[in-house]
Image 1 (spheres, rainbow, N blue to C red):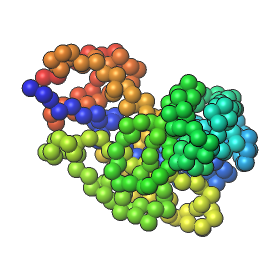
Image 2: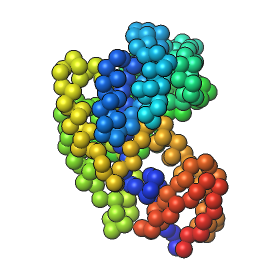
Image 3: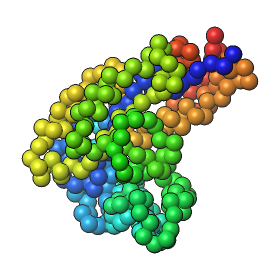
Image 4: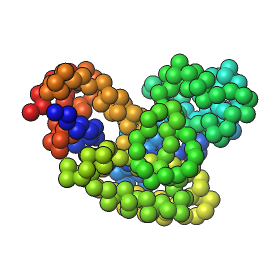
Length: 285
């Protein structure tokens, strides 16, 4: 007998929501206050040396972002598209930014959002494979890319080419949100539809200030808030959880499951929820 096994987020939830905002600008402070008010979690991708320099002190980064459970990630020291840089330049841009962020955050920085056009074009005859290789060697475990927004709400097969669901200004953003909320991932559904889903929204906080529409992100957050079906997480929390799930060890007959990681993992087996604690082995009935 072959069982249907699916990853579930913490507490057995089948849906997750994450946000990603770029450039480390002063408007991030107002945005993070909105996220905190509605219980959202976000990743803020900071430039380091240019063009914006730092808008926040080490103390402010801790107070506004890290202490509230948000993530700080790399966005390039000089905000240059990796696809247009020679590998040595790309390495420097990422490494310089990571070093500075780790000094200011007192944390290990492992995430990134590609600056500018990122990997959507290759202006110096490089390749995505080259970029992925040096990011991996620099211990950058994921990087958000850009392209066509979509409503598949699927987790990435390749975390170094992580495609978000939509920019917050997508004309269909509220249609996507309603579609996401209405998804039925219960055991009564055909097994191919029971995969875990993720709504990933990105943008720049200065866009709200420029357009005078801070109420837009308030409406997005209000619609997504206080939902018991949703795991609210940063980008790195999504990545770490997925990797923990992938490291589960099964016996040959599939009845024993061992979790070698430090993260408690939830799985759905033929419609029955199981949790496997750190270092725990459980039996699937």
